[in-house]
Image (cartoon, rainbow, N blue to C red):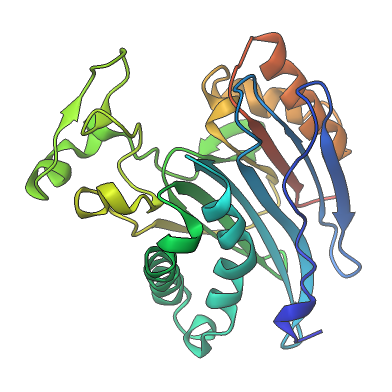
Length: 282
């Protein structure tokens, strides 16, 4: 199935806060299984999270594609990312020789396309955390924003992504002519508006923001158990190790994703909550 149009990406969650949009899948070549769960938060606006969770055959290789896109000021940008970001990565011939460079280029060109279509997509933006799993051997994690990837190795939680928060990248923001303020509220924001320092879209703030991803390549070892991708609706109320401990309790990754979302709700997370769990072993 080499046609990228056949990826059949899964759409955003729908419905009220109490309903979980969930699903699962598995490899027919490797002991890889995945599951996901997404729940709308308490905000009055529609659900703004989108995701991708898919295993595909491409150029004779099995490629796992997993992503959480957490939108703000509308869902147009995360919807665009869902349709285009992975396609832009894999259609680049350089991905097979220099994956890091290919991922960086795809993030950049996708952001440029979003900005050029701002008349249709609006002034909103989105964070992104993506994972590409090749033949259950190599894993590339990339992210912009504060959605996060966490791996369990031998039961220990290892954060695989970097939270791009305004205070941590204040120098870059100020060098670009912006500023970081905790007013209004008590959260650091770029120009007092956006609580992340890197994002797709956000045309009004783009001159002060970065959209280049941090990328991490890891090998899948015998003690590599699972990967959790989730929006900040989960990480605001759960530590990395707590999430890993919950996910390890069941071998069914869909149930694990549901349990993580349920625990975040118990802890009164008010944001949209999106979670994918990928198990590398049976």
